[in-house]
Amino acid sequence: MSVITKPGKSEKPMLSSVGNPGTMNALVYYGPGKKFWKEKPIPVIGEPTDALVKILKTTICGTDLHIMKGDVPDVEPGTTIGHEGVGIIEEVGIGVSNFKKGDHVLISCITSCGKCDYCKKGMYSHCENGGWILGHLIDGTQAEYVRIPHADNSLYHIPDGSDEEALVMLSDILPTGFECGVLNGRVQPGSTVAIVGSGPIGLAALLTAQFYSPAQIIMIDPDDNRLAVAKTFGATEIINNSIENTVERVNVLTGNKGADAVIEAVGIPATFELCQSLVAPGGTIANIGVHGKSAELHLERLWAHNITITTRLVDTVTTPMLLKTVQSKKLDASQLITHRFKLSDIISAYDTFQNAAKEKALKVILTNE
Ligand SMILES: [Zn+2]
Ligand SMILES: [Zn+2]
Image (cartoon, rainbow, N blue to C red):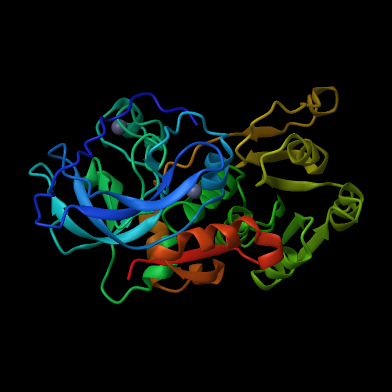
């Protein structure tokens, strides 16, 4: 993920101006394979546009596991991980006008100033003063408190009486599945959708694809449990690609046409190459996966197939819309939550999430008690 600038770290070993004792606990990355739940100074307001948020609920993302493996080398040792969560505003800088102390807020995984050229185009992920920085270039949300830069544009009000656990799914995975998979994939009424990868992101694409009433949604994954979950979430067909010939099955299911929208939700060369064998003429391959290696592109076949390949970072521009669908129960985001821990038990939560297949884990919720 490319991030152009990085706001300065304002965490200093000093008392917070709100009269907190000055320290909190946070999940801190110390290089590949090394993480500790340890005491750190509570962040302080550094810029007038900052907000200090007390975390109520947060979660762990597949991206955090990549960081822990050392796949995201620009994460410096000493950084607090995490880019998802809901919380309550503890303090705001003098330049923040949309939020005040005591407001319940949803934290977007993308920080955006709302003013730069990219933000004006709705490409918040490429914000010149933000983008994906939380739990990456600045301290993140797997902590008791987090500093949110550009608070006015990077936080969302949570209506009273909301299911705050469900809303944690709106920080990243639902907008990611929807924007990078469903919107980029141009899912339409009556169309055929194939989703490669039935993890939380693939399932988020499955849930939000149904806004458009596609005729078929085929889920593809090597894990039978995840496929069974996909079935209960609305998949019309499931394929275990570790034991079945996926291309043959998709051909049978689609009258040898292939799928109109093929959504890649894994991020390895083999799955991206599989997508190329599943896409119908005129169809779209919408990549969501975070790729660390180059993949082959079969132009010798695809050049004449009128296909589109899309890539995108989530911009979270659809978060307000998704918030309404969760509020009105058109979208049941809480289905994605399988495990719950206290925030102070985050090391056990990582163990569970890392062994997702064995533990039958999708998303874990961590509550700051
Ligand atoms: Zn994430
Ligand atoms: Zn911007």
